[in-house]
Length: 120
Image (cartoon, rainbow, N blue to C red; front, top):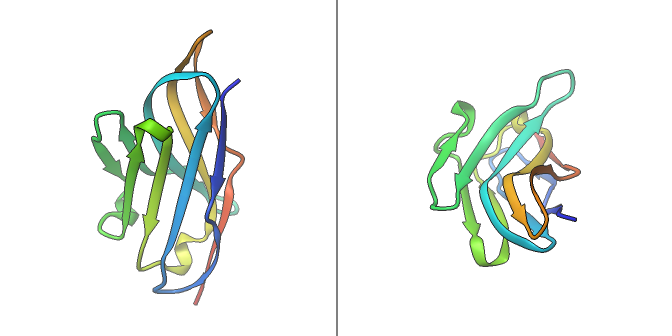
């Protein structure tokens, strides 16, 4: 069974930086797209950034120029470097892996989420 394990969340002051990591485990053959989404209280989940297996990226408008997504295909791991953090970046950040092919099937998976809190 495929699992996504996130790490790196926490509390940071406005203007600071954090780096999130998400490692996919299991008998994985390939992963198409990996990404990060976030959900703030009483708001819908929104895209933060995504990256394909050949490193094509796209970002949510609110994070462009401040966040950078990267990926290590050999480790089935995706990273999110977050700089110039703002209080409005406060949310639970969820890792997503899309079209994950393992030895049995193909599916989409989500991590459990990691809290990012930015204080003003």
